[in-house]
Each structure stands twice: as C-alpha cells, then as structure tokens.
Length: 81
Image (tube, rainbow, N blue to C red; front, top):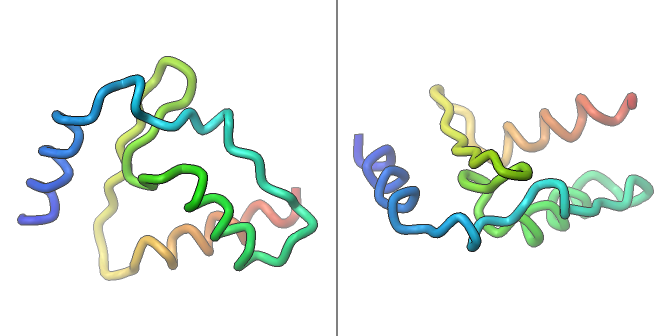
C-alpha cells in the first residue's frame, strides 16, 4: 500500500529529537472541541509519528475512517474525564 510505504520512509528519516513529545502538548479543556483538535494538531505537528517520553509512537489504522474522524472520537471519549 502506497501510504504505508510513505509512513515507513518518514519513520526512517525523522530523528528522535525532531519528534514532538506528547507530554509537552497542552490543551485547554474549556475550548470547543474543534479548537482543541486544532490546538492538538498544531502542537503535535505529525499526528502519525511522535513520542511519549523515550517511546516513539507510530500511528497507523485500518478502515475507511479519516484521521480527523479518529481524533474527533478520541476527543469526545475524553470529554467525560
């Protein structure tokens, strides 16, 4: 699959120090969900490849839903916290 090949190439060429640490992301819970999503994407830079502390995280999912849909689902699931 073409997109999978692109992700593999990106993962191989991005340095660990270039990855955004998820722990550094700050989101204002008082903002509407669309603004929180925008803030998250602006801060994470690449939502498919980032790190959490010393662990590199590479996101990949199957199916027909878009990344935007998946992020919306994640944000909505955290609204009750």
